[in-house]
Amino acid sequence: QVQLVESGGGLVQPGGSLRLSCAASGNDFSFYVAGWYRQAPGKQRELVAGVSSRGNTTYADPVKGRFTISRDNAKSTVSLQMNNLTPEDTAVYYCNLNLRRFGMTYNYWGQGTRVTVSS
Image (tube, rainbow, N blue to C red; front, side, top):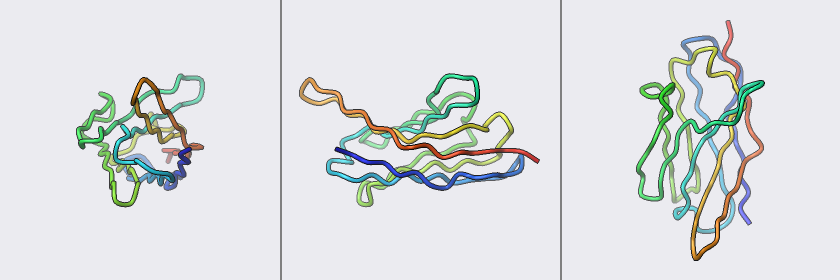
């Protein structure tokens, strides 16, 4: 069983920056695909950024060029650096780990951290 603990959310003004971090317990962190999702009020949860076990990254179009996802397998952490934030980035952000192995799917979510972008 994997547990994920997020930190780093808060209130920031438009144009500001935040860094979200997610610490994972358990084993085999390096094998997981890690991702950050967000859910704004009244909207569905959506993928923001992901990083594969090999370090390949993917980003949603609205955050390309502004957000950077990274992972540290030695520390079992995944981070999301968010720059030039806009009110449209306001949401609860969730860390996710996903692994498909031997016909099984392992999928874990953090509890979420709230990001509010407002002047």
